[in-house]
Image 1 (cartoon, helix red, strand yellow):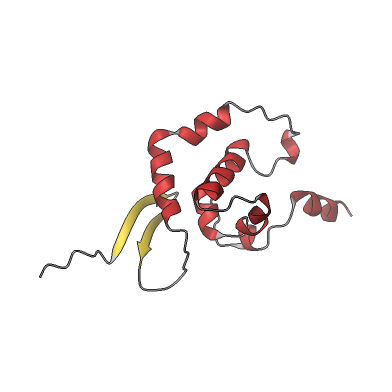
Image 2 (image 1 turned 90 degrees about the vertical axis):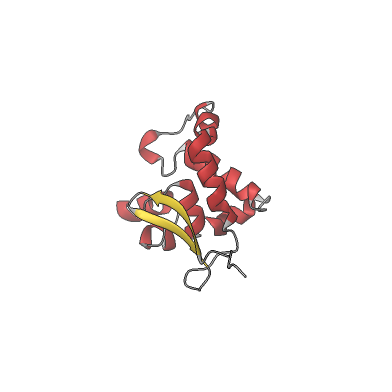
Length: 126
């Protein structure tokens, strides 16, 4: 009998990191299908096109997340079953969501300890 189950799946690179789905533990997620969605978007550019249709009237010096980041987070959230916007308060700390959206720091202090930029700016100005 031939063994047809791969021990890992490769999803290409995200910056300098190679994204691989493995089945032997480590950092786990139940939303691994999001990697397939990201690969599809990388090839189609759909989220870039959607984001380019939206105007960003925010003050550029106060922007922490681009319109593309916000569109991506919402679309991936919906596709993964997070239909309530309240879910995004927790998803902003999720390493897989950071990877899907394209953040460079998916596990470090910029993700895990991230608060609102407004709170950071107020603290720095004191």
